[in-house]
Length: 88
Image 1 (cartoon, helix red, strand yellow):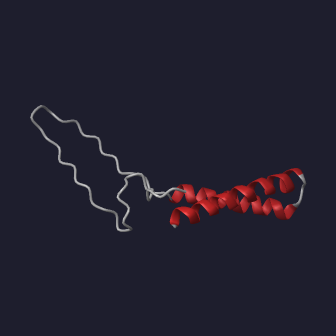
Image 2: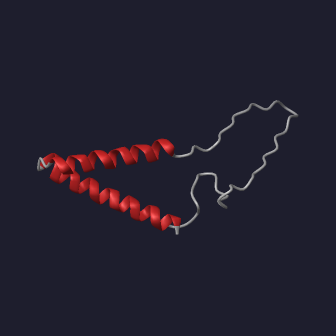
Image 3: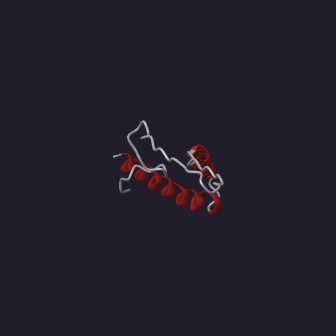
């Protein structure tokens, strides 16, 4: 369900962006310029707030070993890329 909700939100943001570009920047309507700024700020916050996957680089010498442990995420997602595995 979360994938569907985020897909609808992204679709709405895309529609608002297109309409704001046409009516605000091209048409000169100030209210649509504000909508464009608002959508841009929302997208920027989403990008900046997105979690990044943990990456560790270590050089192993001959004879050394590495143990990889995976702990499930609290929300039930077990993928490392931040997605839930649901189709959007």
